[in-house]
Length: 59
Image (tube, rainbow, N blue to C red; front, side):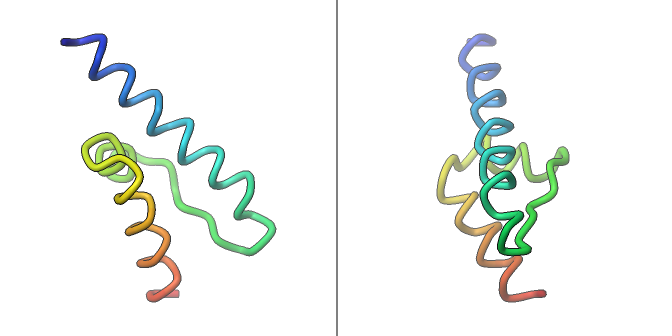
């Protein structure tokens, strides 16, 4: 159980970091903090899409 949660957290961090490596060229940076990591851990890729769209709409 704990290993499964740890894998999801590591996947969330890797996903956010890899997105930031690609998106920095376009000026889109999603911060890596407790809130974004927990969102991506719970909802996976749809949360990442939600974060990107909210970043585009707000800024």
